[in-house]
Length: 292
Image 1 (cartoon, rainbow, N blue to C red):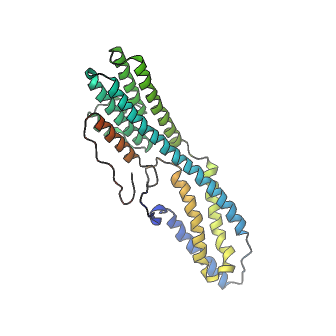
Image 2: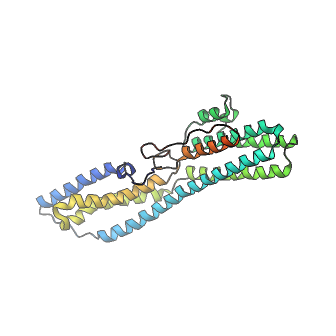
Image 3: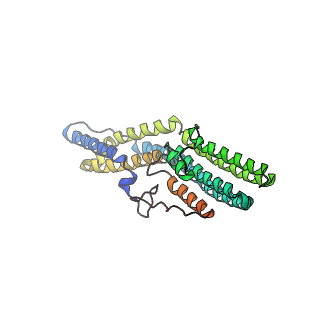
């Protein structure tokens, strides 16, 4: 996620620069052709085209931003339930079950890191093995390691009930928190695995490019030699809005535009480790204005 008070236009719209260069040379070619030939540009209803296209792009960007913001809400809920789960575990389990309490907290730290890696299509093994302190983690062989870690924690709490360390009411309270985690994970996986419909992706891109091609033809009569600059700048605004939608549609894409999942999971790890008396890891600092 790009942070800082002053946005870097080159960084934010890095992918649009190549299209802008191509658009400028196209505008230049149209302008040269206009002045060297007897052809006169037809009157194009660019105002109507531009207004309709702006509405389509605005609707698309709003849809993409809703997905991005929903992902942030889900991870915010994960932060809250992680703290509540740890607090309840330490409060419910007696001193004789402190080893189990520490294990459950560490397993939850491994869970959030595994979930982050799964959403970013990365290997969760290094982080899970680091947190749990062992190389042999059976849950890593499962298709969904994060869900497997959650199941293992639930079984350990059931063992605590059988040993009389917690009662069924306390177990129900802890189980409700695990359900909240599972629901949040399901929402994140839905966002990751369900892209916008093809019409949302293909039609705006096609009409934006078509509009940029027609733009110098409709402006050359008015702008004259200034057409390459004026048309390129106007087209760049539409291309930039189009790219904003592409950047926000996947909040877990591991790009400079996605949610800072590494920062969030590191913060969770620090809070939970301090709860069990361990040293927290250092917080993640932005790198070149980007928080990962």
